[in-house]
Image 1 (cartoon, helix red, strand yellow):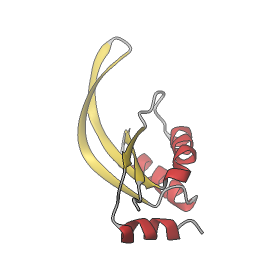
Image 2 (cartoon, rainbow, N blue to C red):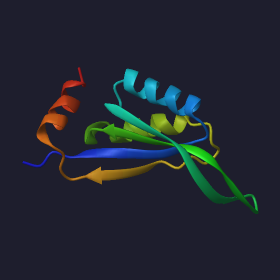
Image 3 (cartoon, rainbow, N blue to C red):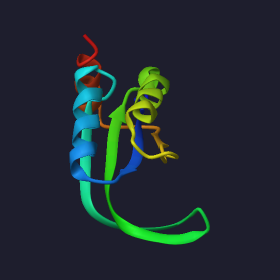
Length: 106
């Protein structure tokens, strides 16, 4: 039987905010684990101008049954006017990790 997870991907303006959101979502038991990757250089159009800057990438691992709630909460906590929140679905993850994620629900 396949056991899947979803990864929520979202860029943040800095490590302080990304860490704050990560800890809240873990404490609220919406995410099991978050990886933060600093130093990403981003380019995007904003209000008619080309912008660039450093961002921190947020990878949050979530069980499928909590995905919608975790996504809503991530969007609520994010400081960007238009936050990017992508979900990347894994059809299969190693059983020991999946079982560990399941054990965090209680």
